[in-house]
Length: 166
Ligand SMILES: Cc1cc2nc3c(=O)[nH]c(=O)nc-3n(C[C@H](O)[C@H](O)[C@H](O)COP(=O)(O)O)c2cc1C
Image 1 (tube, protein in one colour):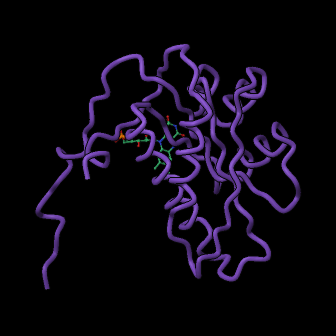
Image 2: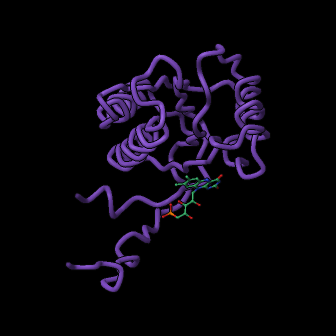
């Protein structure tokens, strides 16, 4: 799968907008992810408002790219009312990686920035977005058109010594 090896974190973006059609494809890809018992614990906030993006960038010490990205997607999770709450973060990770791979397919770039499980970051994001009580922020995904050609590192990481045959 080509997108998988082309993907790399992108933290600098041009000012070009990301159209609604591309966003819908990203959301379709994210929601196609597997989840425990097919519980699909996700909701996605798509943020384009400049002031909100600044608040998201300030929500974590490592989220600066959110301020200048044309779009920040915030995957959020329901941890109550799901059958396998212990698996929710794994479900969210699968959805977020799907999103990142579709970003490559769309010729865009993105970076995944951790929010969960850090409670202070989760509080900051919840306050900025006005999240309802039953939702927790999982991550910030800043995305847009990359300023430079993306240099993927994926293939170089292969290490045969990490594969253990039994
Ligand atoms: C769970 C997770 C949390 C991450 N958090 C951040 C973050 O807070 N800020 C950031 O700039 N990058 C973050 N990253 C991106 C990593 O730094 C990046 O994936 C790693 O350095 C490998 O580089 P690559 O994505 O270009 O292959 C995160 C990635 C993952 C999977």
